[in-house]
Length: 143
Image (cartoon, rainbow, N blue to C red; front, side):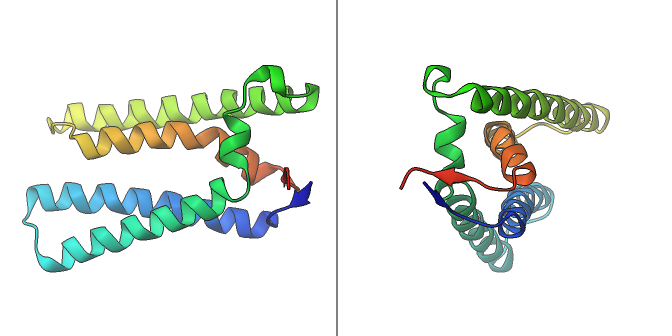
């Protein structure tokens, strides 16, 4: 087993990943109302590249993505407890965030577009790993 990243680097990676995902959605929503121009297209592409790079560095290379998607039968007791706790927190955060967002869209009578839906699905999918990366001091992956 080999330690992959310090907690500070993981937290920075999480922040970059989530901010770039939010940026992608915000720019798309803004350009839906205004107009797409070259600046926004380039910014959207750059944010997508930043998102992919930070996602790979924070979740794939650390083994978090693989860990959170392992079947429960392959986990020991501590890992089962950790996974359960991360899923509980992720579900709570996702539920509140999504309901607040849907309430905003309902009140403003704004249609929900596919970019937002895909971003929410991705957000829900990475939240358990975000919890583990943010709270665990050491993350190990099979070498």
